[in-house]
Structures are given as structure tokens and as C-alpha cells.
Length: 52
Image (tube, rainbow, N blue to C red):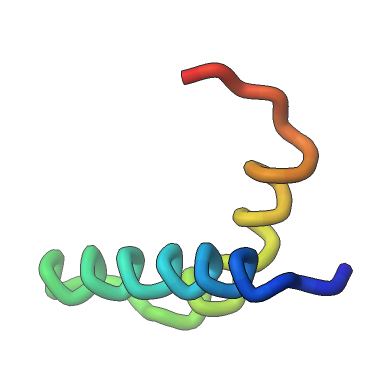
């Protein structure tokens, strides 16, 4: 799947927020959030039908 510029900004936001959480917790490894951010973004924006 090809990401537009707005999609890439969303993925980068997920990465940044997850890295901040890991750093504040002083625990965890950043590899999973960095690698899984595009997958999570795609699931939430393209496939899941949610109405928060």
C-alpha cells in the first residue's frame, strides 16, 4: 500500500507518541512500535469501522 503525505504524518505521530510512552515508563523496547506503526495506522484508518 502506498502512503500519501498525510498518511505518513499519521504513522510518524504514532511512532513519536509510542516512543514517548516507552521513555516515560523507563521500560520496553522501541522496535515493535516503530515497525508496527504503519500496520496499526492502516488497520485503524482503512479497515476498522469505529465511531468513538
